[in-house]
Length: 270
Image 1 (cartoon, rainbow, N blue to C red):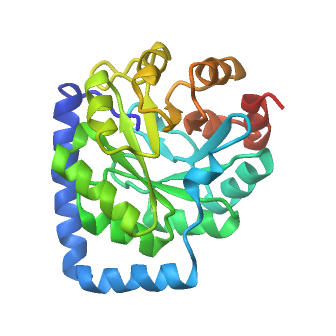
Image 2 (image 1 turned 30 degrees about the horizontal axis):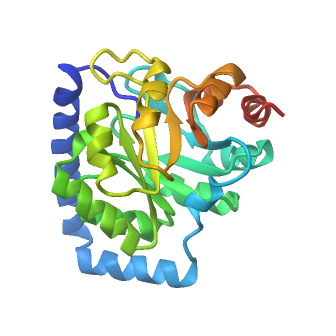
C-alpha cells in the first residue's frame, strides 16, 4: 500500500493504526461484533467466497487490478471513479482479481465500493485497507471480500498470526505484505499462500523494483508472490515476473489510463 512519508514508516503506520482503532470502536458501537459475525455468515452462505489464490495460480503473469480514487502521495487520481465501471473494464482487459481500497481518510474509499465492484465482475476481490482488528475481517466478509491485506509492518507477530488464521477460518485468502527481509522472515513463519512484496520504501517513498528482486528469493517455497508498487509498463511487469512474481498489483497506472482494459493487456504482453 502506498503510504505518505510522515516521520518515516513507523510514524505514519502508528498514526494510522490509532485512527483505525478509533474507527472500529465507533462502528462496533453501532453494529456489535456478534451482529456483524452473523452478517458475515449469511453472506458466505448466500454468496460463497471466490477463490483468490487460485485465480493467481498457473499460467502466465496475472494482474490484480486496483480501484483507488486517491492516495496520500499522489492526491486525487481519478475523480468520480465508478467501481462498477472500472471492474467491468478490468475484467475486459484480462485482470484475474480485483483490489479495492476501502480506507476513506487516506484513499477516498468506501466499504461499499468493494460490493459494487464485485457485483459488476465475477472476479475475486481483495479488501485493501489497514487491518488491525478481527472486527475488520468480519466486516470484510460481510461486505463480500474474498481476500484481505495484512501489512506485516503494522502488526505485532501475534496479531499477524491471529488475523491470518481468522481470515482462513472465514474462508478468505490473506495477502501478507512485506517490505524487508526481516518482515519476510516474520511472514514466512505463517506459511502463507500469498505474499505481497511492496517495492516502495515507506520511509523515503521511493520505489525500486530491485526490492522485489532482492526479497523474492527469501520467500517460502510455494508461496504465490505478488509484486506491489512501481508497475507501470510491460517492461516492469516482465522484470518482476522473471524474478518470481506470479501476479502484479496495479493501481495508479490503471486509474490514470484512458483505457484501463488496454493497459492491462499491455502489462500482460497481449
